[in-house]
Amino acid sequence: MQELEFTVEPFVEGHPGPHVTAAVEAATAAGADVDFGPFGSSCRVGDDAMPDLVASIARAAFANGATHVTLHLARVDDESSP
Image 1 (cartoon, rainbow, N blue to C red):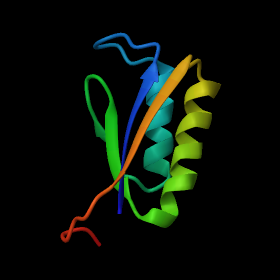
Image 2: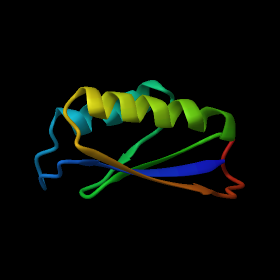
Image 3: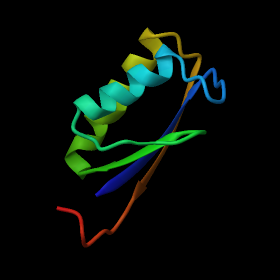
Image 4: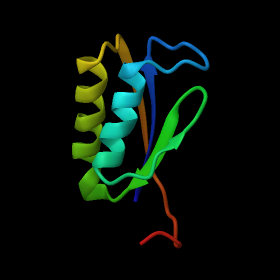
């Protein structure tokens, strides 16, 4: 299991633009349950799904006006996950 934290810029607190919402929607469409936060979003997926998830988020963000996408990936051990 891997965890992805991502931030899509430009960042305007309280007003996520289409570049942000498109990235979150792409992650959701790829099967991730996204925790949408005020300064970034996060989700966990299986190891095999992560490369496609990252690509989907980046494509959607830049196609909708993002100027920068920050990604942080980490392996997590979560016994409660499938």
